[in-house]
Length: 93
Image 1 (cartoon, helix red, strand yellow):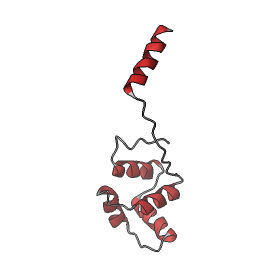
Image 2 (cartoon, rainbow, N blue to C red; image 1 turned 60 degrees about the horizontal axis):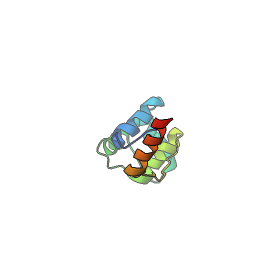
Image 3 (cartoon, rainbow, N blue to C red; image 1 turned 90 degrees about the vertical axis):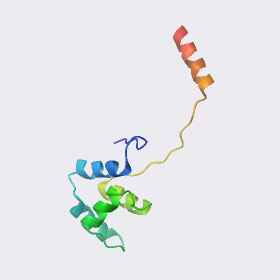
Image 4 (cartoon, one colour; image 1 turned 135 degrees about the vertical axis):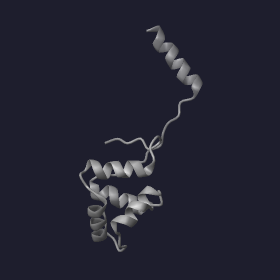
């Protein structure tokens, strides 16, 4: 699944992944408790996600538990002049 988070709130992204996998906050908190030294309960976890105060490590753990990985890659920005030149060339074909 490719999620472009530029247009989505982080909370909506995480919540969508949880729901699309048939999970809920209770099950996720229980699983997170098995993997970390920190103790989670479903209400606190839900609030952290809703308020977008979740830590990066916690977000990675959630993705790992749900079977996802987080890929960060550098975007290449094309200068406007170059883009117009490409459009012009394609228009001639």
